[in-house]
Image 1 (cartoon, rainbow, N blue to C red):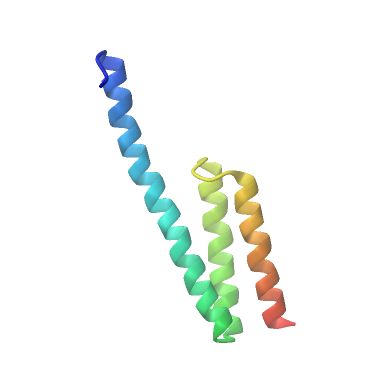
Image 2 (cartoon, rainbow, N blue to C red):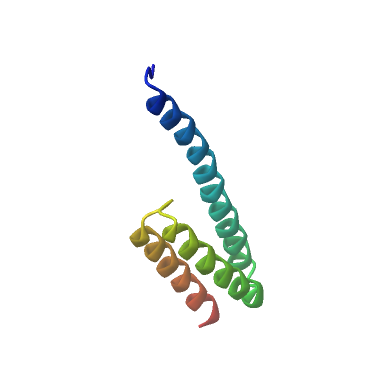
Length: 88
């Protein structure tokens, strides 16, 4: 257990950041699931809209360092391939 005041504050800050980061990651997973259902349903328009939203969210979350920028790029690339396959 933390003893110094600064260590106690760090514990409080870490708990707060953890909740924020978990919410962000959960939001991304939810958006990706809706994209996947649009692709599975062959809904090109909805899938394209969802992809734009995902790209925007991933870039924001990577900028805040919740996820690594390379992971965001990898996810965007994989989803772009699925979208291209649906359109093509």
